[in-house]
Image (cartoon, rainbow, N blue to C red; front, side):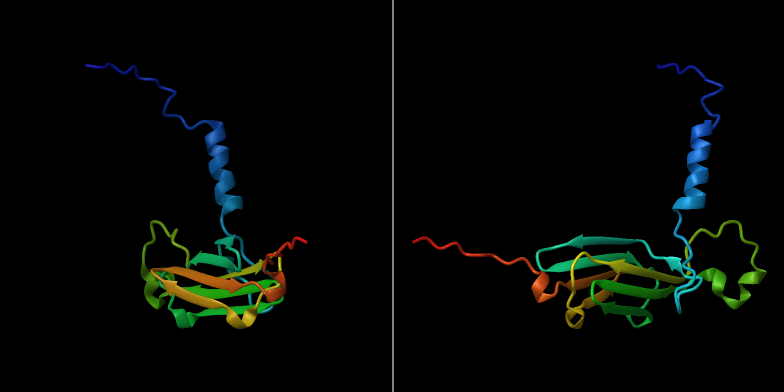
Length: 153
């Protein structure tokens, strides 16, 4: 049998832990976008962006969003993604609820991603599956890596 000594201070939240939590709640959560036409009040959509040889891939969580409710625009090196995540708190009768917690995100979300090289907007492919949006953005021909063959004499 192992005996554990009770530490009365072990359960007290340290000042550092409390400050970390405060910082996360006030700063790290997605911000609201202001001043961008048509995007005011929308939260910033968190994304993963990675590069492959001839494409960039942008992935984002869009729970409950149908494909037809996602709007994607592209020009030069920039991709803009807009969506509306439905939520229980938006329903008409939600005011009659006695909310105990409301942490699930809902409402307008947007993300403007600037990529490091020109893109081919005409060949962008996007799909939503299981609440994850994946946007494959091909690089423009001039931005794709070229293999140069070295000749010998």
